[in-house]
Each structure stands twice: as C-alpha cells, then as structure tokens.
Image 1: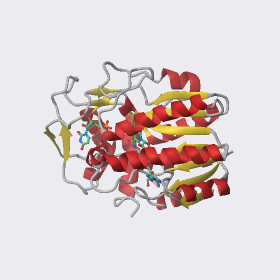
Image 2: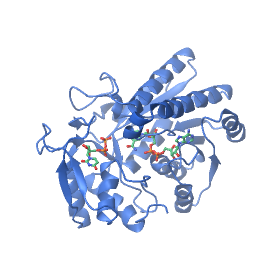
Image 3: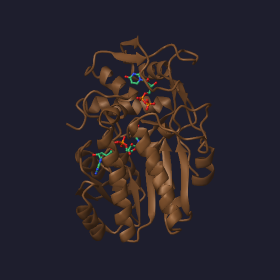
Image 4: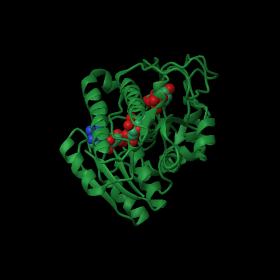
Length: 336
Ligand code: NAD
Ligand code: UDP
C-alpha cells in the first residue's frame, strides 16, 4: 500500500514514516521544509534501509501538488503539514488560516480529482478548549481558544462536510494529546526552531546546557502540586497509532475521530522529577506566573481508540524522558 505523508519531515511525521516503513508501506513525503529539515528523513532511511520519495512542495502550490499525485498515486494520505505554534498564531492569524486551511482545501481538491478518498488528519486536544471535566472523551463539546486551535476545529468541520457530501470519503481524525520523546535509537527526535515553547524540548535543552533555567508557568493551579497536568504520549506510540488508523481506513466509512493519549495525567513537577531521576541531570527551575490560555488539567479517555483501532500507548513517562534525553544528548544541536 502506498501512503503519502504531508509534513512528513517534521517531528511526528518523521516518526510515523519510520513506523510505516517498518511495516513495509511504500512512503512518499510532501514538505515545504518551513519547520523541518530533510535530514530527519535521511536518518529514517538509514534506520530502515528503505527509501522515501521526497517532494519539496508547498501545499499552497496547487499545480505542484497535482504533479505529486500524478507521479505517486497514493492509496491513502496522512496529513500532518501545518503550522503549530499557538503564540505565533495569535500574532499572525492570517498566515495560520491561509497555511492550515488553504493547504488542507488544496489537498482535498487534488485527492478528489485523483479519486483518492482515504485520509488521516492530525488534530489536537486543543479542540476541547477549556474542558469541564477529565478524562476527555471524543464526544465532549469542542471549542477553540486561539487561532491555531480554530484552524484545527475548522478543518475538522470541513472534513465532516466533505465526507457527508460523498460517501466514498473515508476520513480518520486523530486528536493528539502531548506528543514527546524520540525514537529509541536516538537518531531522530524533536528539533524545534528557536527557543522551544513546549515543556519537553525546553527541559532537554536546559539539561544539555543550551538554556540556563526552566520557567514553570504557575504553581497555583487546582492540582495536587499546583502545576498543570497533561497527558504526555511517547511519539513512537503516537506514530504507531497512525499505522492502526490505516488498518481501520480499509474497513470504515465516513469520518471517525479518536483521541491518541495515554489516559494518564502528569504535572509539570512530576515530569521534571522523573526526568531528573532517569537522566541523573539536575534541571534548574523557577516558578513564574501562569501562561495565558493554559488549562489546569487535560488528559484523555482512550477507550474508543482501544476498542475501534485496537491501539493503546505502551511507553511510560520514564521512557519518554529517557528517549527525549537520548536524542538531545546525541544531537546537542538538533539536526544541525
Ligand atoms: P512539525 O512542525 O514538526 O511538522 C509539520 C511539518 O509540516 C513541517 O515539516 C513543516 O515544514 C510542514 N509544513 C507546514 N506547512 C506546510 C505547507 N504549507 N506545505 C508543506 N509542508 C508544510 O509539527 P509536528 O509536531 O510534527 O506536528 C504535526 C501535526 O500534528 C501538525 O498538524 C500539528 O498541528 C499536529 N499536532 C502536533 C502536536 C504537537 O504537540 N507536536 C499536538 C497536536 C497536534
Ligand atoms: N510549561 C512550563 N514551562 C515551559 C513550557 C511549558 O511550565 O517552558 C508547562 C505549560 O504551562 C503546560 C505544560 O508545561 O502546563 C505543557 O506545556 P506544553 O507547551 O508542552 O504543551 P500544551 O499542553 O500547552 O500544548
């Protein structure tokens, strides 16, 4: 089976390409390299000794996108490509709407013209807005609190409309919780541009001496230790969720939505102490005021993915910390 992966050289995309190649899928990637480097895919090829067809194409370029589909003709598409920085989306909303929505609309149009109607889309737990309770189930109300979240939500609505317009479409929406860590080889991992916004890459960059100190956003939340609780999921477990979703695409119809998380929540302080324990590194930290838009606790109910995809996360927080550090320590300057 041939799978086209948009945004495949990025963090989650490269780990998913690795899992797909391990399962003997034929893989092609479209990426404009706006937030990634081709090195990630070269390394995936090295690990698997398999080839990936790479197209440096922007999804906004309809003509080139058409050419890719003429050349590769996939059986299904996994759509990761998109901008993902919440703070940046507040400052540059039009860029986010144009890239994320415009790119998806082009993709759907080209897929339709080539009669390819199997799609997996990367959504996010951000579409649950400020949830009233945890664990979060797929049928909880959706809302968005920033432009990035709204692009995810609008795309979800768009995909529902597309599958309602034509029963031959078969779409799976995956709502990721907090993907972290790296492949256990330490050869590929997370390499964000500039100063990281997310907790894990921030901690690993403090550990490697690139950043001096971790700021913890708030210790006055209504949680046992006052810091926020999140559902961190190992990126390799998440990547394997896409392999299971492809299996499901063969037999499902319409649009189906699944949470991909572990179902367990950990506070920032629990993450920090686990990281220090498994790596033996001391992470200097201080408490600062809350970050705007953060919810106090978010973790998933994973029953639906377990029941319908036959998937569950296997790696624990110690694995996540160990593997994140393994990649960072082997690659102190990321892919550079
Ligand atoms: P990433 O930035 O590492 O990967 C996204 C890739 O898409 C990058 O390689 C980038 O160059 C590419 N891209 C962006 N716009 C493009 C365009 N117009 N044309 C072609 N390529 C384009 O991000 P990631 O962490 O791997 O996330 C993948 C997807 O998962 C994104 O859609 C993101 O919103 C979603 N997601 C991520 C997280 C997370 O915490 N990492 C959580 C929930 C959802
Ligand atoms: N966080 C923090 N310091 C940082 C980055 C993140 O204290 O430098 C906290 C953040 O407030 C949240 C948790 O770590 O409670 C996870 O944040 P992240 O940005 O990784 O993911 P989010 O859940 O916000 O998408």
